[in-house]
Image 1 (cartoon, rainbow over the protein chains, first blue to last red):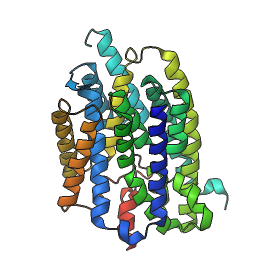
Image 2 (image 1 turned 45 degrees about the vertical axis):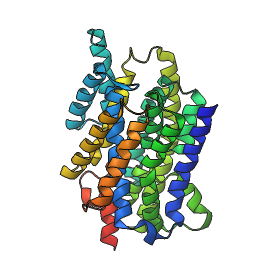
Image 3 (image 1 turned 90 degrees about the vertical axis):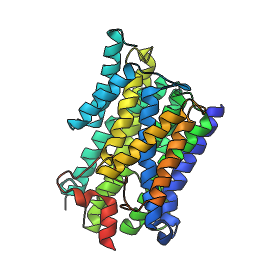
Length: 103
Length: 250
């Protein structure tokens, strides 16, 4: 039930963020510094989420089949594969490496 | 003018199909991370912002708390506020129309509208991409959630690897040039250093602070990292970039 609460708060914040763009005076958001920080935070969060999902295991670092998924996903992206193909390649790499015995 | 001959509607429809389809990966990952069917659907119906949705389930899957997941999702949604401002200036919605329009203000609808020059086409592109993605994204989220439940052990199918590839796929289009790479590397390093010392989920917020500080104190392009997840106009890239149009309009 607690998790539901955070989900709904996050959903409410997501909508209010979008809506704020339509009501906040443009001058406030048009500050180049605000735009830039929103952009760099986006890059930082996505990079961090990639790393956490690849090597974090609770509070320790683990080097397992997920690293293979990271490498395979990077190759697929480099070859300009569409998003869904990249995701499938990542899961196939992790599943395949586990079949070969690399946890 | 026949609607199907409208270039913006064609682009909007094709981007709807491409983006809507990957709702299946969100649905499958959410159910593999322990979210119920209706929790998974709540994300796609109410949050409706791919990056934020993946962020929330990614933090929880890594053992992070609900509040850390909520914070990461909210920070990743900040760029939608800037898209809202751009779409308000471009499409000038009146009265109540702002409320539904805000909900479908995402990377793809903004990029589709920004790539057109005629005001009617901009409006058609925005609504076609926004509504099309909303409908398909939710249908395919449901398909993914049901399929994910039926799969059994998610690790056996490499679903944890799918999550890694998904985040890399969301990051990739934003890594154009040296500076975004440097920001991504700094955030990755901050994450790895923080993991052993703070509770799960918090390293992501540490990385967000590091990346935000780099943006605050350095003086690069003001639209760094604001590229949409998908490029609807691959042959005329500068037109598809909402931030560059914003600059041109000034």
